[in-house]
Image 1 (cartoon, rainbow, N blue to C red):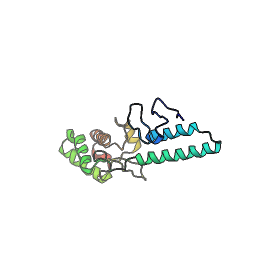
Image 2 (image 1 turned 45 degrees about the vertical axis):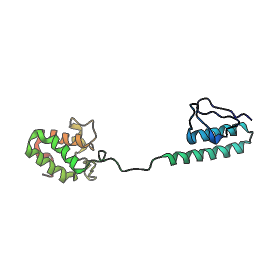
Image 3 (image 1 turned 90 degrees about the vertical axis):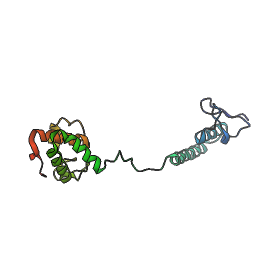
Image 4 (image 1 turned 135 degrees about the vertical axis):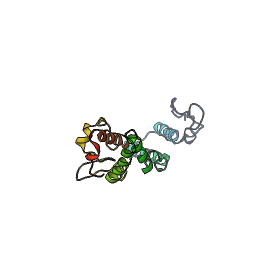
Amino acid sequence: MRLPSCSSCCIESATRPPARATCAAGGPRGRAVKLHAARLVAAAAPRSRGQQAAEAAQAAAQAAEAAHAAQPAPTAAPAAAMAAPQSIQEIIRSAFAPLGTDAVTWALRVAMCESRYNPNAVNVSSGTSGLFQFLRSTWALTPYAASSPFDPMANARAAAWLYIRGGPGNWQCR
């Protein structure tokens, strides 16, 4: 019996079983080809609707299992993705450096007091958020309102901007 073939992904012949399917370019194509070849063989044989449904469910389960097995194991986020306290401090220093060493010292102290250098900090009672704990209404007035208050660079720059306009009096921590 000659098996049907699919010119886009595999070549089947009567002498080559589906498990030995090859891609049109000549190399093995893995589970996807084997599953596709098995479907081609199954398509050549007559069967009832109940058999078709059972085979479809089995093929879907096999495909899901193969996809799950092909996923790499989760790994720790790279150091660049997780902002370490030192890098947060560097962000604060760079935002406040043009304002002088006293402003830098003040900013580091306030960010530590307000959020413990956590850019994702939220005060549920007041609604403040970010490194320098901005109220939504205050954040909306800054030139960084289009950014998230949880973006440490935007938050530090907005704090420097507000420090220039109103001084340190805008924060409770000093």
